[in-house]
Amino acid sequence: MDDQAVSKEFIKSLPKAELHLHLEGTLESELKLKLAQKNKVSIGQNTIEEVKESYQFDSLPSFLAIYYPAMNVLQEEEDFYLLAWSYLQKVKEQNVVYAELFFDPQAHTTRGVSFETVINGYYRAIAESEKLGIKSALIMCFLRDLSAESAMETYEEALNYQDKILGIGLDSDEKGNPPEKFAAVFARAQADGFHTTMHCDIDQEDSIAHIRTALLEIGVERLDHGTNIVEDPALVEYVKQKGIGLTCCPVSNGFVVADMKGKEIKQLLHEGVKVTVNSDDPAYFQSYVADDLFSLAAAYDLTKAEVIQLVKNAFSIAWIPEAEKIKYHEQVEKAAHLQ
Image 1 (cartoon, rainbow, N blue to C red):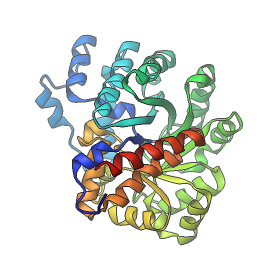
Image 2 (cartoon, one colour; image 1 turned 180 degrees about the horizontal axis):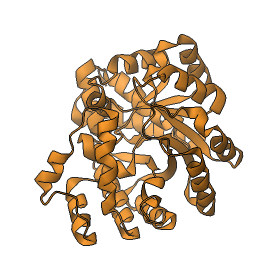
Image 3 (tube, rainbow, N blue to C red; image 1 turned 60 degrees about the vertical axis):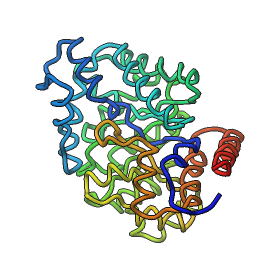
């Protein structure tokens, strides 16, 4: 193995884990239109081209304004199954072998779709994913722009399906919705044995304060996005010492703030922080995880060694047994040295 320019083929050859992926963000234009027609939902578009053209945004709020209405096409258990299964089929081509997948039940229950419908559809795809050579699991996220009471109600319902949920997360519009708003429900989830993570989106109002709260007060095991942590060297040292990972999404970063945050990702990588690369909402950003890795490598002149470390970091911070992490690391090294 050498450290010449990193190719797409090299990146695709590496077995990969994805830890920051919103299932609702994998709704490709073709499936959206198909489900709209099946469920007789008016979406304002009649062709695949029109759907693609509607995916236009330049900030987190403008993205969410498109993202949530699109979910109206998801009505039945089979729809949620198809959405998750379509993603899994897609990333099999990119050599993803492990995935922890976010889902947002409140985005569906608030429009009349039952929690049972959502989780049973998604979980059916999870249960079948090993047919594709992919091990996968679900992370249930709360919508932070809804109330803490709504989050607790959702959590109560989720306990009926605890065996189908690996962890608990927090996403959506961060402005005015700090981590401490959800301290009680996260404390309960941790006491009940769930893994926990939180979105700390890039360049948000009070970003570093939110990161500090998520880490030191809530006690999450991972940060989603989180690259603003470079503003506080003490927090960087904290996550390094604790082995807390960051699930970064360079291509989506470039859409919402016109900066992939590659400089920060490289800095953290070189400082020994377990930063990772993920795709976030690939249907909207038209970039799946191998594409994100290649875009970052091309824009910031990553070496093969740096790409390998990013890939290995994802397995290191995955919520799997240590023996499995070692196995995956060995697979990555083997694949890399065959190139």
